[in-house]
Image 1 (tube, rainbow, N blue to C red):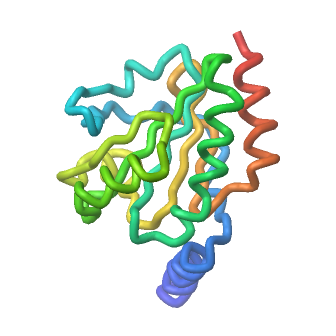
Image 2: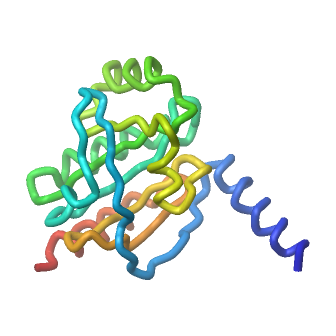
Length: 167
């Protein structure tokens, strides 16, 4: 039994290291109550996300897969932002804030960026340790899909369109 746990953990680490996707689950659960501290110093809570389809992306400037997927996340945001879609990029607690600010400014990230200074947000969202980890939250505030690694963006777009069409 212990060997199976280590193999599963090793598989997750290997997949994250090469940027492969591991779908954590497709069952619906309520997004955890969290307060996100945005780069401008303002705050947003999980409750503020209700009524919108939201992509919550845990990332780090030192994560090569995170950096590589960011143009796709920007394109996804730009494609759906006028239709009730929101994106929230949450930088991990170990990421120096100056690096996050620099990355956000030089890449002209058009969506909200938060810094999880204490690690409390990552802990609340399933104790996120591997980046990128992405959650898709529906209009009712339920997590409908989770990814570790870069998602298949064509599949992700189909899911977003389906969720945006829901009442």
